[in-house]
Image (cartoon, rainbow, N blue to C red; front, side, top):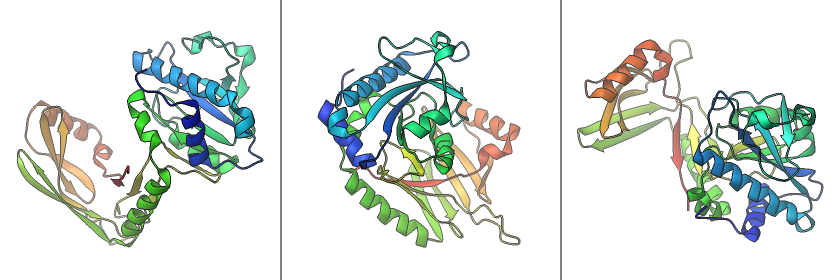
Amino acid sequence: MTEQLRGEELAALVQRVFQPQPDEPGLAILVDLPDAQVADGPAWRERREIAAAWAAELSARRDDLGFDTHLVLYRNVRTNNGDLPASAWVHRGGPLPSGAEALDPTQQVPFPWIFTGHSMLIAVTEFSATAPLKVAARSFPIRAATMPGFSADMIPALRLDYQEVNRRVGILKDLLDRAEAADLVFRHPGGEAALLLDLRYRSAHASGGLLPTNGVAGNLPSGEAYIVPYEGEREGEPSSSAGLLPVQFGDEIVTYRIEDNRAVEVLPGGAAAVAEAEALGREPAYGNLAELGLGVLA
């Protein structure tokens, strides 16, 4: 690992993000494990090692922090934001298992047990656990920072002043809340493209990297205000989202024609454009414009 958080930096990060209270039951660091269906890889292994090192550092600082920290393992769910499995394993020390098949079934615990014993969670995973942890936070007294695909190269972003990041994100959220539309102009080697996004009837969301109260889950590192464009669900009021959206695929710029908040055509181009047109033809919902996000870091 080329970049690491020192113990005091890690403890300070937990304090900044979660703002723990004296009665916090504990912190769980979640990692998912490869299995016969989803093969392991160097980045995934490094991610698990980072998580294990963090759990050890925080556990050693139990008296200073005021709560226990546990490393929690579970079988990967094979897709981003899939439902969490029914069971998990609390790692009791020693080498990490190389995969889910090495877990002892007699030592598994129900995932709700993890939630009742740990009000703070950090999910350092291969597959995003943001959506299922948001769902769990509605029923259990938890809050979760999710870090799918995390790597050591991202560690400097954890040293940011998230009070300031959160303040700036709040400003962007307020602007999005008051906006009725966003006019975007893209300049690229093929020319210029304009896109209008219809933001009526919507409220924005803020993800500023601070999780002081239970009931929420969000990405870390973070720093984004985002809003879902109006999709035309009101009777007689179609969405006004329309225009051209260019997206880079390797060395190729693929341009989508947008109507009613959906990509309805891929303009002629190279191999990537052909592949995207085929994907859109197979599944029209693939072309839905789901979100406008405005990000900040520092």
